Length: 309
Image (cartoon, rainbow, N blue to C red):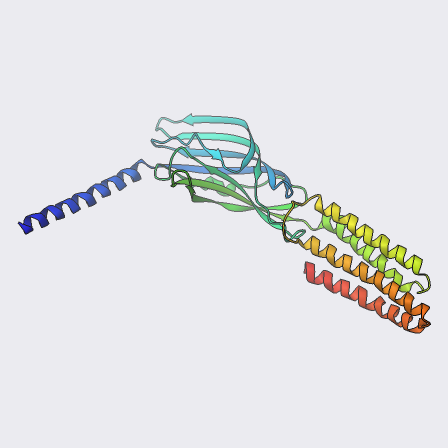
């Protein structure tokens, strides 16, 4: 009797394994493989404040199988304009969807290293109609010719090989195939140097002219220092206009803080040497001024080198 039960259990286990194998084979056979390719022709309006960029590109999808890839979606798109869309099918059932897209895409950008920041821009395509066991993206070999014909203003752009990943959709706990085209954007330092860095350096050096003004002329020294401080504060708003509101310091913020400190200390030095002058210690005040003519520029130069190099 026991041997009969054992035989039934073994048979049930065998049937279960056999049916699972057949099911897996069926799922594998029914999976539609979609070849995806993209050719980016333009990236403009890369806006770190809005955390977005505008792109124009050609997209193509090739597939043959039970499940259609027509219902694709741009996951991180803010707005999309289809300039044209053509679907063709050959005599062997191979379908080819060709699209030209212009759109604005959202992209998280960490600006902590500004103005030396670098970002990976992504255009993400997914098909939410079919789970990964039904429809799976693969990179079309033609995607290797993907290139950018136009740079985005102050940004230097570099193509990164696209990737295909699996994305878990929270509502149904299923994985969906995801195609991601990637471009690396590196900010050019030239605009920042011309518009921000050089003016700040000039203003800070201007504040150091107080070390060459006689200690008795305190009004001139204070006016010079206050003007320099207000100018640096004004430049802060110029920098803030191009950046998002973040809860961390950027390199530009550190530059401003260091510049504030130098200008403020120069102003304090002017007041201190004037007090010494009024107490009859003119020689001491002159020695301090002479020392500051070397210490302040040297300190600021070292600060800049550490910050940007």
